[in-house]
Structure formats: C-alpha cells, structure tokens
Image (cartoon, rainbow over all chains, first blue to last red; front, side, top):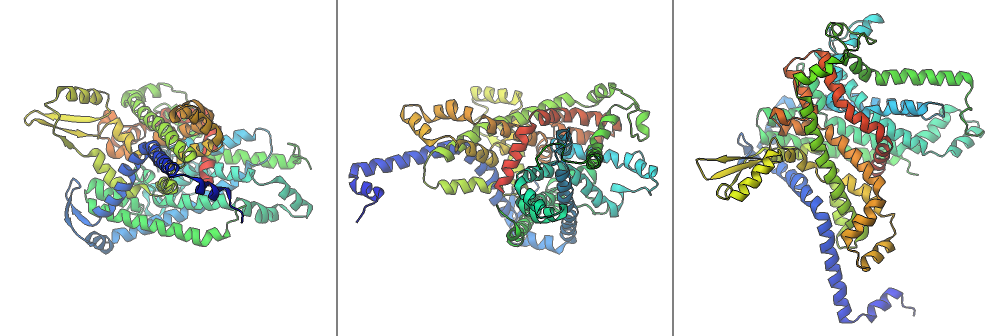
Length: 313
Length: 315
C-alpha cells in the first residue's frame, strides 16, 4: 500500500503540531479579515444593510422623514398594484429597453467592424467612436436638450435643409420616448464599441484565412465565424445594457421629467418621485423591490435562454 | 495573403474611408455642436448653425460669472479624488487577502464581494439617502470642548456637518451637503478588488512566502513589492473610478442642497433648469465640465479600455 505524502504527513503530526497548525489557520483568518474589513464595512453599511432595509421599509407605513411608523404587511404592494402608475411605468421602461438595447448593440457592432480594418489613421476613428465613454449622462442630456429645441435646435434645422417635416422631439407624447432613447444610444455607443472591437481583435486571423480559402465570402465569415466568436461579448452587453436601460434616470430627469403625459415616466423615475417629492418611503421601497425582482427574473431568463447559444472558446 | 495595410483595393479604401468619415461625423456631431455653440455670440446662437460663425471666448468667462463653475469643479474633484484614493487603498488591501492568504470561508467572502456588483442601486438608495441626509443627535458633543473643536475643523473643510443647539446641551450631526456624504457609500469597489487581485495572482506565491518569512511584514510586502508590480492595474482602476464618480448624477442630486456643495453635473443641470441661461453659456459650461474627463480619456485611453475589457470578461 502506498501512502500519499499528505496522509503520511498527517500521521506524523504530533498534537503540538496540530495545535500550531490550527493556531496558524485562526491567525490567517484574522489577518485576512483585517485586510478585507475596510471594504467589508462599507459594503455592509451601504449595500447589504440598505438592501434588507429596503425590503423592511416596503412592509411598513412611513412618516415624512422616512421612519417606520406601523407594520403594514403587503399593503404598500397592494396599493402600487391597484394604481395604474406602475403599469404605465413598466410599459414605458420595457419599451425604452426595447428601443435602446438592440439598436445600441447593432450600431456599436457596425462601428466596431468598421474600425477593425487596417488602414492609416484608423486609431483616430477608434478614439472618435469610443469618445462618448468620457461624456456623462447629465452633459449628454444638456447637449441634446439644446439640439432637440423645437425652434432654435439644429436637428429641426437639418430636417428643414433636407426637406423633411419638423419633429416635436421631447414635446410630443409620441416622440418623447424615442427621443430619449436616441440620447441613451449615443451615450452608450462608446462603451459597447470598445468592448466589441476588443472582442473582434481577439478572433484569430487564421480562422478567416482558412474560411477564405474555402471560398467563404464576407457574409458567410461574418455569420459563421465572427458572430459565434464574439457572442460572449454580445451576450454580456445584452445583459448589462438591459439592466442599465431599466435603471435610466439622469436623461429622464433632465430631458422630460417623466412627461409629456407620463409618456417617459420610467419606473425609476416613479420611485424617485415617490420618495424625493412625495416622501412616500414605503411605497418607493415597494416599487424598488418590484423592479429588483423584475430585473432578477429578466437576467435569469437571459442566462437560461440565450446563454446556451453563446459560444465560449 | 499577408496582413499589410495594402490589402485593400483603391476603391475599397475609398469606400471604407467614406463610411468611416460619415460615421465619425454622426458620432461626433453632438459634441461638435456643443463646442461651436459654446463659442457663439448671443446673436449667433439665435439661429442654428452647422459651422462656427464666431469664436466668442468671453462665453467661458460669462458662464463662470453666472454660476460658480470653478467651485462645482472643485467639489467634483474632491469627491472623485476621495473615492479614487479610497478605491486604490481598499482594493489593494482586499486583493492582497484574496491573492496571498489562505483562509477559511475565502470563497464565501469572494462571493460576498461579487454579489455587491449584482445589487442594483435602486434597491439600496432609499435607506442610504435616509442615512446620509438624516440628522443624528450627538449627546456628548457640547460639553466636550476638544471634541467640538475637532468636529468644527471637519465641518470647516466640508467633510461632515453638525449644528450645536445652544438651548439644549446637545448637537446634531449629518453628512448632508458634505464631501463624505458624497463619497462614503461608494468608497469600496468589488470590480477594483478583482482587477487588482488578478494582477497580484501573477506574482509568484513563493516570492510572497519568502518575503514574509524573512521578516518582511505583510503590509510591507504589499506596499514595497505587490503594489509597485500592480501599477498598471491600479492605473486602470484610478482612471475608471475617477471618471465614474465625476460623472455621477443621482447621488449628488439627492445628498446636496447647498449651492456651494453641488458637483459639476448637477450644478450645471440645475442652472439650465432654474436660471434659463442662454444656450451658448450652457454649452460653455458643458465644454468646461467635459475638459477634465476628455483629458483623462485621451491620456488614460489605453488603461481605461483595458479596464473595461477586463471587467467585461468577468461577466
């Protein structure tokens, strides 16, 4: 019978050695916790405890400064599901995600493919295409607020120049949400392009060369090599951009404040109004929990349905 | 076929460049418009323009007179620096534990860190808002002179806020309208911890064990060996954290009310909202606010992109 080195060692240990080993394990644990503790304290105070408190708040009636007054069970939830605000906001948020997410990814993929060529000056174009990373949501919104101005805005001026009818952009109920979506697409374009370009550059050149030798054209290579090889990045962007879209606040607050006629009142804005303007902390917390659960379910669905089709090299 | 820049025909090259230029114009158009509007005179700005009609630099001076933009900028820079420095320190410490120490429940703590990246902000923001803006009584404060003086010092540099109530011997304490209130909830970073840990893992463990056994303490090893080796990762983290904090909108909006404590992002947005400024002055403000982030973007482009891609691989 052969004894593996580790068991032999274990047999050879004296009680004092066992004790010193245990002491070392305890000492290591304490040392590790000391190194982790600054981060842990912040996470406990500002992530984990607040998460539980949100759930707790959602079960209570609250006073105007946010103190819990009386246990209410599911009353807050009952109330938000009885009013039509929540359904409108859910519809608006989902529509917003549908407008924003696929267009951003497709446009970014186009830019990434375009800037993945070997030409002189290509790095200049890459910097331009990724430049929106440096711009914040607030600044983007201020710029577009000016561009969208129905009278003095340059976008309607361009429409005039090419002979198209003017658009009411943010003022019209029908065009407000698409207009906010355009702002959001532009804002996220840089980030998505950078990631997709990095993914494209990671695809081995030999794959394309052998495909060309086999007579594959551009579209065949694109469909059968490029897309499968970069599918992990596309999937990642899909999940992250969907979550981002469902949590969009800045653009809404600066551009439309939920209007006109509630047509851009996304769920996050509904939450913000409930606690910041109306001091209905319990209601706002219940809405937050609902949004959290929706996002969780969406993410699980995305992982369950789509991730199977993702090709991990 | 070799990979040389000359593998396209002339026609293909022309087409590609044309497409690239068209897309570049579309992508850069909003920023370009902001720039030319920021330089337009009050009369020029009345009608939309595709090309710059004037170079009225005075707008930047006027915008600064209309709003304390320099003060807003200072507030943003202090807030972002607090968060960035804290990220660098806290992430290095935590990454050291995950990379070099064998300890019980390591996986549990690792998952705990990971889970903070999955919890959306709206699930935590209401309690955080109440914690930071709430006024808390401090019973021991007013009869202890040293303590009051220390608090007064921190109040003077806007790190904390407190008021002494002369009628009752007590005072209240708050983080509302303070730099700590702006920074505190965001001072730890799971993303940064993973980024730095990834770098630490490439340092041979033998090197660590030998150094620590030789009497070099763990902290000294971290400071003199690990951190200098992980400089690229820390550079990425610094650029990333600074940009992210500088561009924050909702949190500063919630926890600052005092005009002097606003950050650039909300300061400018509220200005446009309340004062109905001329668009050329607003755009001058926008360009002013964008200068630091663009400088950082151009200088730290490589670091930033590496960081973003590293974060994505985790997903």
